[in-house]
Image (cartoon, rainbow, N blue to C red; front, side, top):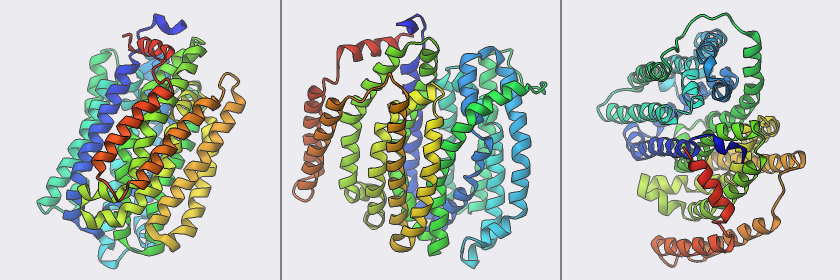
Length: 492
């Protein structure tokens, strides 16, 4: 095994990433009902809508931050030049766009079918939000540098604590009677403070690190953007599915409360997304190194082991949430909001399941710089999602948004899978294992469905645990190869 000589902390990275993502989502999850109920359905819908508009601004970094992670992992000695040049380039790219958006903020708000009583507040919120994202994006290479240096503990601590502080302060300010504009100003100050903390953290790790106006290395910038542009297209699809749905929902219905119900459905599934994305973020540097050392056998073992774990452990959990959304949501936001948002959660699940199954494969594609295949299919995902939004929102309002999202995810992930296994010869489809995963999850699905109205969720959870153990035995979940790979990953 070529990579056994290195002490790469992949397992720690996954743990740090998962804890950071999970803790952030938990804090958001806990305080979310407080914020919604204190703001009111319409005001929270306005808050979510403003963040949907400014949520497009991260596209202006064109994926360069993901490239910073990859190339600092490979060339840590160039960290000062890489971080400085990317910050300067981002500043001059993003500044004119932000100026344009501020200049035409009145016109943007007037296009969104917002009630007249919220117009002036929306314009001010939008302008402050643009400033918030300007700071966040221009200084994002500092976060990427920490990840590239394999210091995920510090990186995720900073990002997680920043989000948690903003969420808790937001809840406190809402309960204290502060308005949306004051809360947005707080977001700006907290974000700037934690970016400064990221800079000081890098400085402690590498004392020689410093920001400076280095001569722009065209070849370096070109290399970063070549890698980053594919990530840009992928991020474009994510932002379309995350934000455009809410903008179109407001445009077609004119009801800010619908955005709140849709957002509850999105929040309910974000912990699952956070855990899955944390695996990708943490393992990409390892895949990159294994690929550089031509350790294809290790990459294949990661793919097969990861797919089995997700297929047997993660998918049944998602099926459980799909069938029992009201029972789960009522414990969080109360019965009324749970009833309104339940259809969204169920619709989101059938798009999340194929996404989860694809995580090991897409992680490999990022690590081997072959994510251009994902980028191509994500373009189709965007087109399908917008097209379905236009058709389904007038028919099913906020549930139509969720159906559009999941359908586009399903089609795109199927296309990515078959395109990649056709291109890469060393990856083969294990039909027998695939069929076992389908059988186990089909059995669980029908058991959950059959018992839905007869026994409590606790008993169903015990049945799930028993079948999970049975499924693990059937699939030989803990094979000798899996344990050897785990030992290799755990070596520090």
